[in-house]
Amino acid sequence: MPLSEHEQRLLDEMERSLYQNDADFVAKVGGSRVRPSYRSVVLGILLAVVGIAVLLTGVFVQVIVVGILGFVLMLVGVLVAITPGRAKRAAAFADEQAKTTAPKSAQPGFMDKLNDRWDKRQEGDR
Image (cartoon, rainbow, N blue to C red; front, side):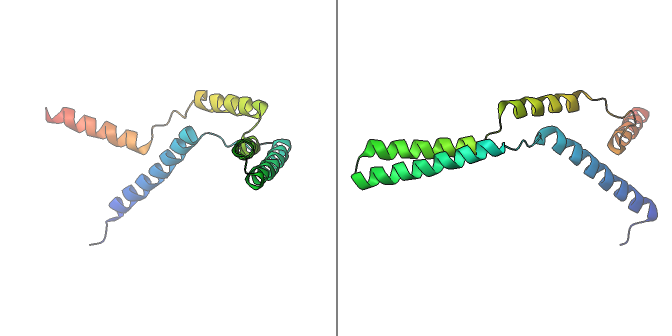
């Protein structure tokens, strides 16, 4: 059974509202993506390569402590490569704070209107 024009318009409006609310939710919860600096990526890769070399050396000479040290160096290298710097994290935090304190538009959304209509109907039935 096809939808009437009124039902089709309501469905379209609900879909637009859902996309808008979903975008707001993602922007609120998702946070901003901060890329690590070029310098930290290069340093991290170098540390990881040195860690692999130390790990292989530890396996070759059969000394467990050297192998563990190589693994730790690899882990630190990866963490350095993917972690953003302090200045970038502080700037991203300030941007996020500005987004959350920004005033929203005064126009009520579609769902707000529907909720108001529902409340009015419930009050009228009493």
